[in-house]
Every structure is written in structure tokens, then in C-alpha cells.
Image (cartoon, rainbow, N blue to C red; front, side, top):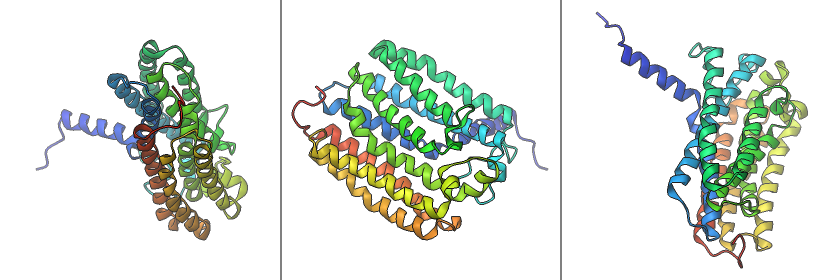
Length: 319
């Protein structure tokens, strides 16, 4: 005789489902963005407050999780996820928790917006600790995350998702630096742009397996607008801009020379770009390219953070 599940088991299963709905495997890009911001502050002579640093990372992750859940909600409303029959699990097509009956549409919306609501008091506390400028940074960041999926902006559906993603992750870097520095600085923007662009390339390559479902639901991503055969070259363009920016900042003595170590990940980006060019119209063949793209962004960011935090900066930049 099979025993019925207990209330505790049911509650644990619900908690696990809600946690999985945030797509936790993708939250690493926000952790790395925070590390870059903390590194620019530390590397330019700012004493790091460990409690505020932990709170910054924790609630940046919560904000990213909320954005992921809200994206699933709006992709269900638009029909994009339901129409997506060529998704490449587990990388593209969202969590599919609504389509598979794990969570209802209403539960998903309440959870996503609830996560964003939790971030507000934490942001106000950190602003009280560091300065009111953080409120502006937080508002812009939350607007970017919301506008990415939600009407009336729906940046993702207007071929501007990459711009939204680049802005959002650059803001995370700037915000993490601001909490420690207590003032605005150009340093985190100069340091973080290459990383933010590589994060945007994760979004970009994920659009290729999803493009037929996106097109069927009226979601006009860049891949839908340009078509896979043309859009495949955009991946290399974004990567070239990212690495070119990093090299330019180092050449101009805006970043430490040893930051060039982060540029070594161009090997991963270009291998992924080569695979994408070869298989742009064959979504099932893009798994390795997507893995390389995720690795390129994360390793680039970690190497960059290490070099920014622990090597000598040129002159008195940022101090």
C-alpha cells in the first residue's frame, strides 16, 4: 500500500518547484556581475563592507530570479512558449512550468512580482548605507528587467532584447560598486561593459532554437527579424565589440594591464560563433555552442574580477 504524501512533503515539493521556476542555473551571471563591481571598488582603494557586499549579491540574485519568472509569465501570455516546439532543453524556451502544469499563470505572475517586491526594502536599506544614488540605479535596473518582457515596452519582442540585457547587467556592476564606493564612478562601467555584452550573447544564441516559436507568436527577436542565416553573424559582432572594448580600455590605461587575461575567453566565444555559423538553421546542433557561450561569459567575468581586485591599477584611476 502506497502512503499518501504528508503535508510536509507536499510543502517541500512546492518550495522546490518555486525555486526551480527561477532557473537558478542562469543566476551565476548576476553573481559574477556583482563580483566585478566589488572588484572595481576594491581595486581602486575602497574598503569593502562585507555585510553590504553579501546583501548586494543576495538581492541582485533575487531580482534576477524575479525577472526570469516574469519572463516565463509574459512568454505564456504571448503564446511564445506554447508555440516553441524546438526548444533546446535546458537552455532555451523558459522553464515551461506553466505549460506543464507545475504552476499556474497566476501563481507565476504573483511569484515573479513578489520577488521584485522583496528587493525594494533591501535596496532602500543599501541606499541608506551608501547614498541615494543607489535608488536611481535600482529603479533603472528594475525598469530594464521589467521592460525586457512586459508590455508596453517588450524590448525582447522588438529586436532590442540584447540592448536591455547589456544595460541590465552593466547596471548590476555599477550598483555593486556604488554600494561600496558611495558615489558614482565611470570605472565600473568601463570595466563591466565587455562582460555585459557577453551576457547579451547568451540571450542572442538562445534565440536560434526558439526563433520559430517566437515568430509564430509575434515575438520579433533579432533572429526573427534578420532570419537565422543573417543573424548568425551578429553573434561574432557582439563578441568582437566586447573584446575590443576591453582591449581599448586597457590600451588607454583605464584598466589594469593584467585585465587582458579575461580576453583569453575569446577562444570560447569564437568556437561558439563557428558552431553557430555552421548550425544556425539546425537548432538541435547548438547545445555545445550555447555551453561555450555561457562559459565564455562566466569565465571572462571571473578572470576580470580577479584581475581588477588584486592587480595594480594605472595611476590613481577611481581614487
